[in-house]
Image (cartoon, rainbow, N blue to C red; front, side):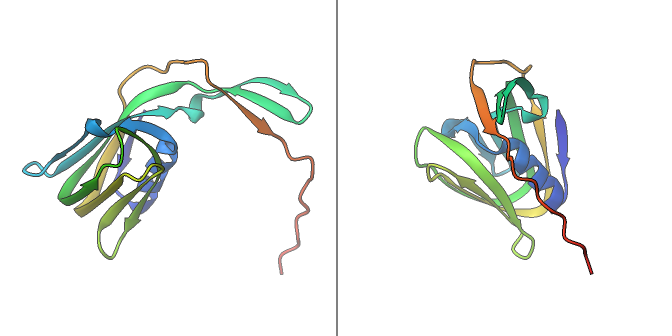
Length: 150
């Protein structure tokens, strides 16, 4: 997968792909002279998920993992505070007024990137692999009624 990032919407799409991705904090790089920030991570490739089993209202999913790199260009300034050797990426937001990209991480790592323009890519760097992790979801038995719109 290769996703170009050039708008707030495309950054949110990349954030969706990277939700709950694990990264080693020493695998982040900021090249001040080149104005490039990169983060190597391992993400669950939900876009390749396969339903393995469904019993009544319970589903079990087999979800492969993939190694990816998120690269952002035109980074003027980076504020990075590392909390541990690994962290989990929860969300990525963009403040259009300040031109500031904020990474929200589960274990407290703080990444704020001031950018000239929003430009980057999310690219898979390995084939999908399966490590044995499976996910279970529950199906809602209650159906929603659609309300007429006035």
